[in-house]
Structure formats: structure tokens, C-alpha cells
Amino acid sequence: METLAFSVVAACALLSAIAVVRSLDLVHAVLWLGVTLFATAALYAMLGASFIAGVQVLLYVGGVITLMIIGVMMTRRQSGAAARLERRWSEPAALAALAIFGTVTWAVVATDGLDAPAPPPAPSAADLGRALLHDHLLAFETVSMLLLAAMVGAIVISRRRDPGAVAKRPPVRAASASPVAPATSAEAAE
Amino acid sequence: MTLSTCLVLAAALFSIGVYGLLSRRQLVAILLSVELMANAGNIVFIAFSHFRGGSLGQVFTIFSLALTVAEVVVGLALVLLLYRRHGDTQVGLASEMKG
Image (cartoon, rainbow over all chains, first blue to last red; front, side):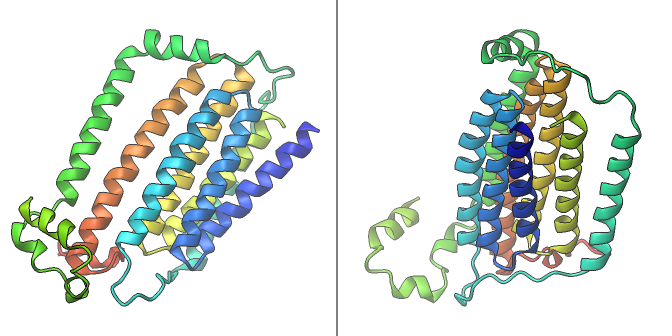
């Protein structure tokens, strides 16, 4: 039963991952990535990490995928055509990927005693919280600083440096300005 | 479901990510491939945590999740900047520093 569930989840993850890298439509690729991350969350739950599985669903399937879709929508080309993805160097890339996969698989197979007979009991969420806020408190606080730095960095990188850039929008936006006039004036005031 | 099968699954996901990283030239698609690779790394952490005991693997995974989210946020800001500069998000466009 467990083996069957693992096979199904692994097949889902692998097939959707292949769809992520082979899909020709960017939005489809993002959605397939959501399927991969969801299958990974199921795998975490099967491996006794139910808290991580929940975090994965909330943070990735909920947050990152939404962010990615917003990113795709904001960078659509003006022509309105669907964002087609082209590939280059497909064969060398596949060769490199196969080489990495073969090396790691060989290393796994060649290592003795990897499969312990009986897995020890999984740590509970309480154990996890104690480990995070007690033993690894410094790393935890450092990560919060890193998140703050990433947030400030993202704002600094993506804001408009030129205050007059709002007026120099493409004419497509200017033509439909009447419904969005309050927003435009708010941006200009900013 | 043993440790070896989990590791092989993670290796397969990682190499699929490598394939995408090398064969795509659209910046958002490259970010997606990096996500796949980071995800494979997390699977290895969780698998070792499950089959060897202790909560250290799960703690590492939490930190790794936070780092990956930060990477996505900064990466998308860079995508937006590239789009504003060049009107497209192909990585080949950002070659001003080429000698």
C-alpha cells in the first residue's frame, strides 16, 4: 500500500516536472510546477514531515506560484501574443542532466547500508519548534534578517527610478485612461 | 519506499531541473527550473531526516524554504527590471557587460 502510494506520488512529481521544462507556454509551466510542489508536499507527509508538508502547500503552492503567475502576467509582451517559449541546446542539456542523474544513482547504489531496517520515530511539530527556537535560534534570526533584506532589495530593484516614467507609459494604457484615471493620478502624485 | 528510492527520485527531479536550466532562455522559465532543483534538495533533507531520525533535516528544510522564497522574490524583481529595460525577458538581452 505504501509502495503503491509512493509510486503514484513519485510518478506525479516526475511527469509534472518534465512538463515544467518541456511546456511551450509559460503559464502552463508555472501551473505544472504547482503540481510538482503539491506532489512533493504529499511525499513530505508520507515521510513523516507533516508540518513541512503544510508549510510547502501554504508557502509554495499558495504563495510562490501566485507570485510567479503575477510575474508572468506583468512581463507579457505588448503584442498580446501568448508567451511562447523556445528551447536551445536541447540535446547537450539532456546529456548533462542524464550524466548528473547517472552519477548520483550510481553513488546511491554503490553505498552500502543506506537502507536502515526500521526508521526511527518522526519528530513532532513540537520537537521541531523547540529545535528551531532553542538550538538554532541564531540561524532563525539570521533568516529573518535575510528575508528583510530580500524584501527591501526587491523593492529597490523593481521600483521606477525615473519619476517622469509614469507619464511616458505606452499609448495603449493612455487610450484606456478614463476608467483608471484615479489610479493614474494617485501614481502621479506618488 | 526506502531511502535509496527517495534519493533516486530526488536525483531525477534535480536532473530535470538541470535540463530546464540549460535549455530555456526565458528568465521566468529558468527560475522555475531552479525551483525544481531546490525542491529536489529539500526531498533529500526530509528523506534523511525520516530514515535516520532527528529533527535536523526538517530544520534545514525550513531554512531552505525561506531562502528559496527570498531567491524567487529577488529573481522576479530582476525579471521585472529586465522587462522594463528591454521589453522582453530573454536572458540573452542582458549582455551589456560582455567584453
